Amino acid sequence: MQIILQKNDDSSNSNSNDINTCCSWDNAKQLTAKLTRIVGEEHVLQKKSAAKSIYLKGARLGYGEALCVVRPGTLSEAVECLKAIVESGAVVVPQGANTGLTGGSVPRSSGSHDPRPSVVLSMRRLNLITPMDDGTKLLCFAGAGIADVGKSANAFDREGHSVLGSIFLNPSVAAGVAFGSGGTQLRKGPAYTDRALYCRVNADGKTVEVVNKLGIVGSANNDDVLQMLDNLQQPLKDNHHATVIRSDTNSPNGRAKASDSQYPKKVCMLDGSVARFNADTSGLEVNRSEGKVLILATVHDTFPRAQTSRLFWISCDSLETALDLRKRVCLASEADLPTSCEYMDRDSFDIIDQSGRVLCAVIHMFGVGEVVRRLWDLKLRIESISGLELVCDQAMHFVNNVFPQALPSNLMKAGRTFDHHLMLEVGEYGDGTEQRLLDRLNAFEAEYNANKHQSSVQIHECTTTKDVNAVKAFRFAAAPAFRTWCVGENVQGLSVDYALPKNGGLAPEMSISTATAAAAIPLKRMRYSHFGCNVVHEDLAYGLDVNVHDAKMEFKKAVEQDGGKLPAEHGHGTEYKAPLDAQERWKGMDPSNTMNPGVGGLPVSANYK
Ligand SMILES: Cc1cc2nc3c(=O)[nH]c(=O)nc-3n(C[C@H](O)[C@H](O)[C@H](O)COP(=O)(O)OP(=O)(O)OC[C@H]3O[C@@H](n4cnc5c(N)ncnc54)[C@H](O)[C@@H]3O)c2cc1C
Image (cartoon, rainbow, N blue to C red; front, side, top):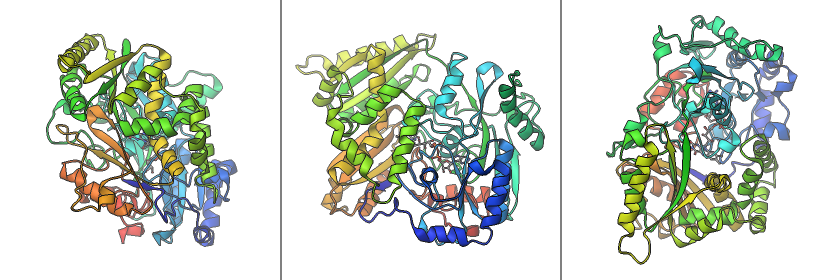
């Protein structure tokens, strides 16, 4: 749950005391010199600068100072850096693409009272992806982007494991595992693997252990595996053939899961449990570890590519109708699940239209890739300058209507006529999936619209690539558009990520008797979700006179009363308090509290004291 633009929110302001703490720390010079020797001067960012600031400010929440940002270029360098930082007594904040929304990817803010300075360990340069087992799996270095994973799988006519709303920013594979990031892919489930190479800080708080659960041939010894994997980067440079990586099927690790293979079955079981949530303690410790171990590389399944794919925009007269469609069309059979089924309500539609056109146009113009990523970083850099925190969103809100509507006119009309919309992507996977799903959809439409003057369900198929891309960009623009809208309208915003029971799905209601009337009735209530999974992102806008913290507590209560769990896929970060069993699991991984201290409501101090 997050509060943005809340009154007195200091999360975007730097604090000079932090810098003094970092620089006056006894081991500062020694540590930065050591890190410089390991990775080279260019990859140790020490001085306060625009380049450094993008590693220190969270995408939606959090800002803290760091002694330095270090960017290793090989796995061995990453391990050496970690050892040096740990030995020095500083704390480590592992970072991927820094698109995390809950503050856990950046150093803690000035109020933490922990004398230990932070070092951001950016894994972004470690971006190698190499196929395994005839392309049915990929070995991914920690900083590889999920959009690039998709491209690598493509070469084998297969698909990567994740599509998040942030895919246009190419978030990292390891962070997906560290959070259990979810996204749109109903047939694949959240990012998950029991095959990983990672580092753990030992209980003495001074030494580091490398744990190898990759299960690949020739990787039994830890030193060998680091060398072997680092060598994969060399042959490409020297124009040799890369070493072929294979699963060691004789070892338990080589046979372990490289995706949440039970997910299709689980998601179709419409009982009172949730499909996925971040405090889930199952699986190898890297899963949902939130930076308490350092992930170096992971193995992930790839998935069959749909032979054909069709996208439908389905407008419904009520949420109940949409939920019935979810049950009877999407989740009727685990054998023919749709590729994805996303939802947005009328407030989402309106806010994206009122504040998201610039982003949609940028995605339309440049596609998912490096240009959009660079523009996003530029926005973060500008926002990190004191006094300019809001300027980008103000500008985007102001010029919004100069840009064209992001959707084709028939969908704009549907968006303004109905209050509930689904984006249903259906694929043919070689076994008649598509036809069975479409038969169910057509029967559903016929039943609902029989004998009615006005349709309860209106189905539009997006038949051109341009329209398909426009719908996807519109959906991906939801979260950034809410921030832009709040800034532009000068209101407070509250963002919540939660999972509802699979047999539920109605919007949780805050009771007016317990919440103040103002908290119970927000100015806007924007609900958009990974509908098939019942994972909801809800953004609530409030006037400046409302106590958003109280509203947040009331909302949490309402979700939990409905059997829901928070957070579902954005991770706890510094925003959500984790339940005791999840906290204990993290303490077991990192007994000295050296890795990402302060996540999930844990103390920030050494040894959790
Ligand atoms: C516009 C937008 C839309 C989004 N949509 C979705 C969505 O649909 N679904 C969803 O689940 N999320 C979504 N997110 C959130 C975010 O993109 C995901 O959480 C993503 O997985 C974070 O990846 P990252 O590389 O940016 O990680 P970071 O933000 O850099 O890090 C996230 C966490 O992982 C840890 N971490 C990073 N690398 C490592 C490592 N090598 N070892 C150990 N720990 C590590 C960090 O310490 C941190 O706690 C969205 C974000 C944005 C901005």
